[in-house]
Length: 298
Ligand code: NAD
Image 1 (cartoon, rainbow, N blue to C red):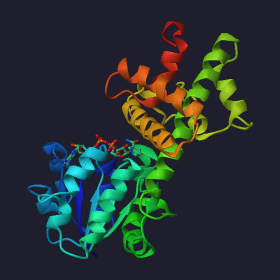
Image 2: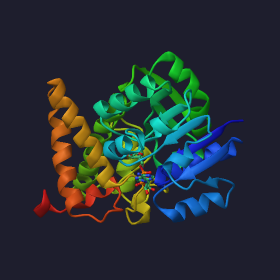
Image 3: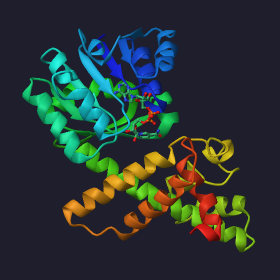
């Protein structure tokens, strides 16, 4: 079993780190939020005094942070993880960030003698806790081979997407589909309500018809049909609307810089911008159905 340093124990990282513990690894953890560190230490992890301490004397480092700025500030520079960790340490950043930042950090790590991958995830908080995430991994064949056993402890599907940054490319393309899909499913339920078609009936039909998709059958935006969906828990995230907006902005930035036209992706970003402005921080992205229902806001 290996020694693993884990930084970022939020909604996702908390569950992922617990699966590293369950796999029998020695786990050292750090987060700016002291409470989440206390909680996981009660289950067998060891608290690091800071990020540098978390990567000292470990075989592997896993980070699960909010955005590209956090990842760059944690990894790069004289006080960063890359400068502090021993040569040969395996580094996995599982945060969702922009492709350029991911490539910059992986290049810096590789130049310093580390094997590093960008390995963002799909699956949400329940899958993070269950160890059934999908990992989209960018990096060399050797870096992928070094990271795979750890990712396997936290996920069900580990897919090598290609060179560094392609994990993030896969993630933003996937989440652009998800954002568009969630709006399409929400619009269909709002229209069904007005046409006198009950939500349960639309769910029963479309989940077996060509409208079937993850936003409908695993994360239905109306209360009732899918018991685990945030719609049954006052739309508490889950996958926060602000995180969806972040991913849709990343997708649009990438589309502009690649010269690709993605009109529905752009419209979804605009709708999630409006929704995030009017929502609480912990509002799930499926709550957009309530904004779409209100004609004065769309
Ligand atoms: P979160 O905000 O719940 O967790 C982030 C954690 O990082 C927090 O505990 C925060 O205190 C900690 N943190 C921030 N800066 C830090 C620093 N400098 N040092 C140490 N700790 C620091 O976010 P989350 O929902 O767990 O998401 C994490 C990443 O996973 C994001 O990039 C998100 O886009 C991605 N993601 C989230 C979901 C989801 O359903 N929540 C699904 C897939 C991917």
